[in-house]
Length: 429
Image 1 (cartoon, rainbow, N blue to C red):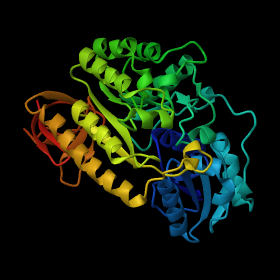
Image 2: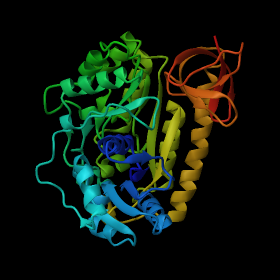
Image 3: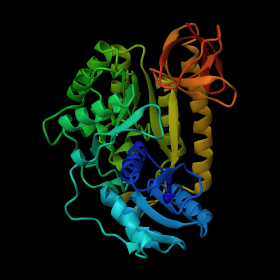
């Protein structure tokens, strides 16, 4: 007898991607888990609420399903605005982030005619209960080690969707990563809503966790996802300088290059302090690359303040920029700020910043022509070339040489020959 099929769509951050893999694993025994876009009896959408655009994408996806199957919605938008989500035609059941460990029960409820809104549990489960043994969506596995946030940035309602900061125990992380390595993963990416705060409530530290993970046999690469600048310390960078398993790429949200805007955002650092963190990375790890999140159009942002952001980025030259247009989020302090910036100005500034980001990225990539990078092979692209990621998080296309056949998941040395479009091209040496 054919098992019922469950299809997924995930919007938003790496933490959401992890949560989706966690739910897939819990359903895999009872249902056939199928890829995004496949026909299914049940569709589960894991939502984001960082911007109104993310919520619009969720609405669009739900509308596109029509009457194809039962639609369940979870994630951050479903957590902060369940009534709004439940009113969308076609939605059968809405459940919060805290309900993901009960996903089997919730799917059965929907299949037997139940629906509506599931309210958050007052006593959420420990993060130690959240573990995956595989990652069906990636060659490298994302591992959530921290959730929630205590920073209360004035533009963000993540704290309402994810709760206060909390961490997995190092023992739980080590057990989870060991199982992933046993199942063939050679690279893991540690992720969290505020990864820099890992261990703050239990006496652990991110640097200490990295050294423990490096002892796992068979694990060849350890990477960090987005890290607030406060998390950059000599102790953390020492790991990446001394351990060849550490991948020297750091994604440090900037948001603005103007001190007044940063204070109004409640970011907790100044431009000078941010610059000091980047300088420390360059001093201790000359081979490292870094990226940044930047927001345009925060309430009151003037043209001169925007230009300060541009000048700072030109000075620091990140490998990549993630650009966000400020989006008024209900319940946040910034939603009540005066001087909301018109959408046309946000669009224009985002376009200018995108062009700058492309120029800076090209400048960084050109430094690697002639150098040898270690590339984790991901997949064969439509152009016939294998592609993967170097240790410094630059995408590399691998040119054929000598008929050597590659396999997804292996790490190979590649001599870089040129820059093409948004990636490097090189040959296996």
